[in-house]
Image (tube, rainbow, N blue to C red; front, side, top):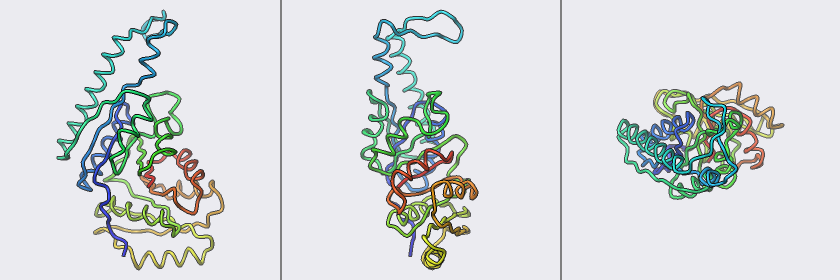
Length: 279
């Protein structure tokens, strides 16, 4: 029987006070409460900004002035401290609300690398799909991309407006060990009354039907929850992306250790504008 695993006991979340970061914090807290996990907030002082401030030819143009001004490194340091304090206070507020055991870490360095390093002891890393940069409005931010390609643990990529408690779930299943793990963790996240969609990726219709029959006999759904099975012969990435949009679930759960190539999984995550949990 496929049941809850409770394998996530420690969750790390990257914080920078952006809307995506605050959405990540809320989602991380909801999952931590659901799984009785500890929560760690990570704030990284961007070494690139500090180095840039020391260069004599670097200036900034503020919204309320047309003249470029020299970047004040001491003012930048103070700004980073204020941002870290705001991130810590946000973590404390939500941890108290959800009654979570929590901690906070401040690092200095290259943001993507430091986030991954600081989260090395966590079972799940939670990030915003995008960061502060205007270039990240579409697709994934640099930290999210690095976590996908170099991270060694499950990563949850969140966008504003998503709630673990309210939205249905969609898990990709092809019978591989990776997809079985994805399904197990999706069951961990399923609240009573939630809808769980399982998109079965069989090479043939007959294979898909066999997998659906086996799953329907082995899955123990959460109380008052509904499980819908969908079948899709996996022809190409565009077909899969279109099917995910048609199901329109709130959170997509999948593994990079499926019968789909790792590169195709990462491309899919980058293209679809959905919260994604990669295990």
